[in-house]
Length: 271
Image (tube, rainbow, N blue to C red):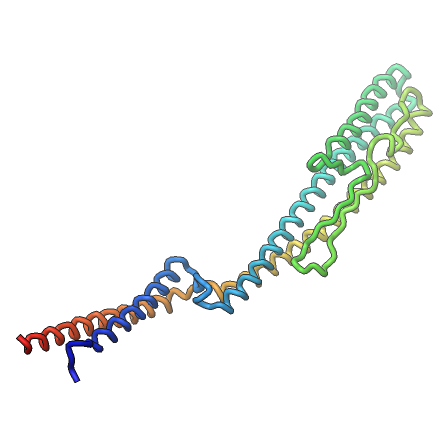
């Protein structure tokens, strides 16, 4: 029964319009942000799962950074060892020449001068091969790197416990005579073996970090895919919802307009 005290049709139209407006706001927010969850009220359980995944993803990102840092450290150490290896090669040439009877002691003095400079350069490389002021080639480096988001997975230890300075490589002799030069040849051969073994150890650990980095990347990709299920907005579906809600809003506005017109017509009957 029509009445002028309570315009129920207009009240219902306003209620439906407000509800549709709220839904439209939610749809437009999702479309503009690209996220299906923009507040806890959108999907409380989904947001909880996504938050937990976000924590795991951050942990994997840090694990990836750790693997990259460790690889960088090992590359630095390997670079230093490579330079020492090149120096040992030149030192061997000098010692081999000095041990030969084809040169005089005077010439051996010249060879020894260069030899001594190269020995000093070995120590210089050891002292300068560092990572944030931490020496890598003096036999003291021992650190661990977490390469997983799972706390139960053991960290990878990087232990560089061999010293490569001249004294540790027993490169302390001279080339001033044939006998001394021959002794140095033996020392250099042993030093080459030590450096080669050091590079092999560094390469082995580096290989492990490379595989760890690959595993981390796979885990991140899979986790990111799972996270997108909860968070990424379906733009096609939202566009369809926007169209549908637009029609509902137009209908609600039209219904409200008709209700107000009807109330106005009833009022005219009293005049």
